[in-house]
Length: 260
View 1: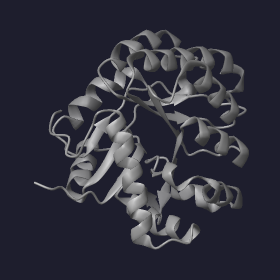
View 2: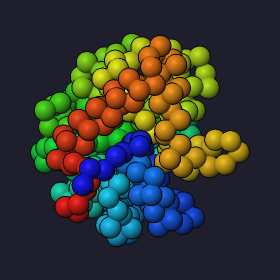
View 3: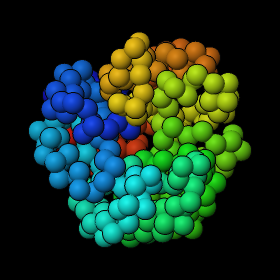
């Protein structure tokens, strides 16, 4: 049976919604492929249970950089569980003022994640890089190769120059509607190669129409991206779908996810 996919959300905190099971059911009903990231490795087991019967929601194992200082000891668990998941996230670095002092610990944790991903191979990572875009890219270059690790820079907000360099290295970029609220975000999106564009929500940390965003909201992003890049909506949808299929295939996943 052919399954029509209506959209892709490559960064969503499904487990942080009041009713994760209902959100997963909505993704299945609306045919939205959703990467369900976690902020701690201990959330992985329940996340995997919630998504086990879903044809559209994929769990990812993560340790958020904002928590790296508090949960440094859990990196061994992340490394252990990465063997069970081709998708890793949310991981990365955060150089914003509240978290800058913990950057050395963040880098230690992130480096170990990257080394494990490189060793395992066929791993897709969704990466946080707020105020640390160049540091994230330097770590990727040091510890990974594009043949074994596919990085997605989630809600990227660094310079156009850093984005172009990251794209050359093999990075993809997941775009949410909040990135369109500033001229800098619009300029960045316009500068990205079309074959590296993906969509996301970062729900429930974003809002749309006075409510929390949900994965099904990614469908509206296609028309906005098409407008920004002066392309027909159907062409933009074809591009994003092709990019998403490539990312999933890198991790050995095809639609539907009937083997899980």
